Image (cartoon, rainbow, N blue to C red; front, side, top):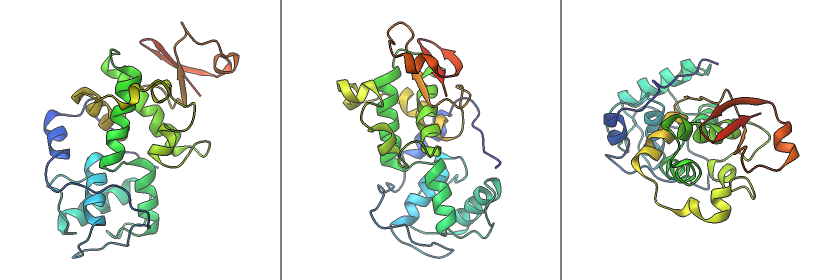
Length: 218
């Protein structure tokens, strides 16, 4: 699979564009509808938002599936080895949900990054987001961003309440970079602070990187 990699940091212009225009809805209980050129509906802003966070959709988010949406979707399909038809069908939605986030999920990612890694370097903050995305792609973990983050015992910040603090702009930018494929951890699924970790199990994991106060592992 060819992945669209980020350029280390998300520009301020991109950051602002993600948070302007029509507000993208949260995930719906029902499966997203198949979308094609000319359609409207509540799933269109979600589609556009996901494509925008990945760097494919470069105009304002609306509720209309126009030529810009079709072009961006076709580029995404080509890069991820899908049938290139410019239609958001079941397979395309499944891949999008595996590698992207909606607005609510980006908020959750920024919160866990802020709760777990504020005070770390920017790279260290992106690294925490990358672990979330790596878990989302792994069959060993829940298949939603909320499920990954709020899995019991998964993150200290959820247990001690720091997850519920208001994240800053840098945490959001780190979340966006992680979503766009920047992974300084080398594919890590876990991380820990070597100064406080006492679990023999976590120390037994294969280590992939050390960034700031955290060791990352698979």
